[in-house]
Image (tube, rainbow, N blue to C red; front, side, top):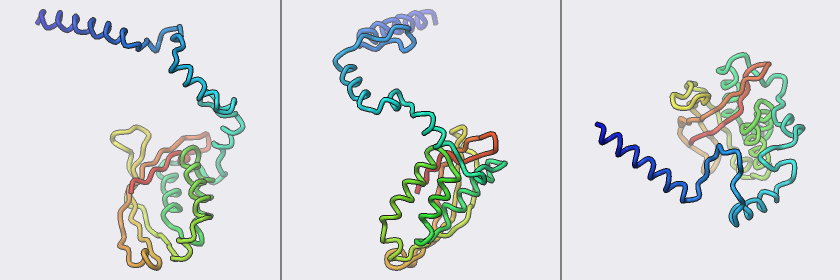
Length: 197
C-alpha cells in the first residue's frame, strides 16, 4: 500500500514537470503569460471584432433588447411556458409560419429568440412551403426535466406534416426537443430551443 502511494506521488510530480515543460500555464496565476507569436495572431483576430463586442460582450442596449419579452411571454410555471411555446411551434401552415416564428421570438429570449427570428427571415425566401401548401399540426406528448443536464427540459411531440408533392401522405412522427427556461421577475420564459429530429 505504501509503495503504491509513493509511486503515485512520484508519477504526479513527473506529470507536473512534463506539463510545465509543454508551455501550459496555471490559469489561476495573477500574471498573464508573455505573448508569443501564436497569441499575437489571436489578438489581431480578436481586435477585428467591433470594439463594443470584444471580450464576448455586447452593448447594454443590445443586451436589454435581446432579453425584452412581450407582456404575455412569461408564464407562472415552467410547464406552462414550454406548453405555450411548443403549441405554437408545432402548429403552422405555409401562410402562417412567418407570423408564428415572429410570435415565438416575442415569447422567448436568448438562443430561442435568435433561432425564431432566423427562421422567420429564411421562410420569407422559401417558395417551396407555399407551392406545396405545407402545414404542420400536432400535440405535446410529454414534458420532463432532463435527468442529465440541470435546467434542461425534454419535450416529445407527435406531429403530422401535410401538403402536396413530397409532403403528401407523410405519416405522423414523434419528435424530441431540448429546451431551456429562464426565470424572470414576471415568470418563466423559453431561452433555448433545440429540436433533435
